[in-house]
Length: 436
Ligand code: CA
Image (cartoon, rainbow, N blue to C red; front, top):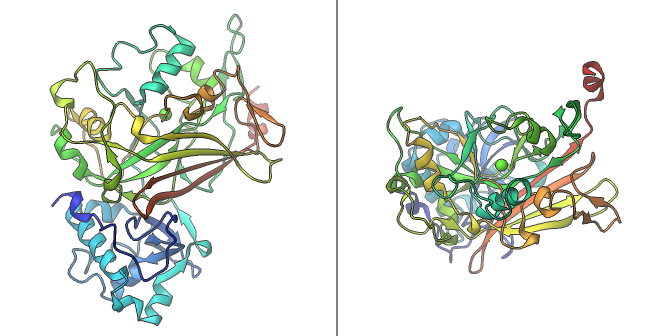
């Protein structure tokens, strides 16, 4: 079985009403972890404005005929146990859910008491981190982003480093500080060197930035020393999330030579609470950019592995009543794709695990309004963003709220990620004072 077996026909509709431009139609069914009003934490899928409690469906025997029928996979505080079951289980459960929620299926539709227990308005639940993440890797796979950074900090005429067109550059990030929507963090402190001729100073970062990314989560891993090939990779990928790879540019700039990002990145990484299954994104697969020079054989792949997903960043300062869009781009611009990233990641024999998170790298497009970081949008601080409040931004201020959105537009339906929302809190000043 492969993940494409879990595609849901675009003509199917649910008995539960879902608007045509809503992000969670029957074709999506993203997985998340939520807390019920009675305090129980469960795994569910989103449908319209509801969350469907899968533990209730399992307890009622409605997952009969799937590998999840007799297992306690959903009365859980994360998706990990479900992920470990593998693609046959994910496929069977997804297709069973589509059957149960389809307009002509009476079993759940007409069981009012079960519906009352199993379907809860999203507005009434709290969402949690969907996955217990063991490992987090961040790639750097947008040619436009890498070129912009190279132009700003190195050589405008030769912005890419010699390795960039030959391998998907990445680094091992920090899993423990991955947080989900609605979880806010304090502005990080660190060392930076604003006056390059003098010694470094310590304090709250002055250059807090976003990176608009898409992350994928591996459902099943590989054994040590047994790489995953590009043609096997898709069946290891459970699903995708929106990802904001927060970056302190001044800390990053001072620390990154020669080993790469460290404290300028590891203080927080945000992901959306809903994990969209890879099968739900199948209608949006498109050809990626031509790779020239040709890549080495282990990075070659068949089929189209870019995804046409519209991505947006919105910003709302403490003085604004409504957020303002500051970036609009598309995931299809990425030069390196997920199957290449996973093949490259494991080609040395390292073992990826169930519940690992992989960031795409900042998704920047070809036009200035499609750059996925403030560093690029404001071109190293030289072109501030003007906001409807009359304020300007080069980097984020305390109290700023950043919202990421993303979706694929199908024929008569939309598959979205929901919202990833985070507010920047002030630095913990006592920490600064004690360290001065
Ligand atoms: Ca990044």
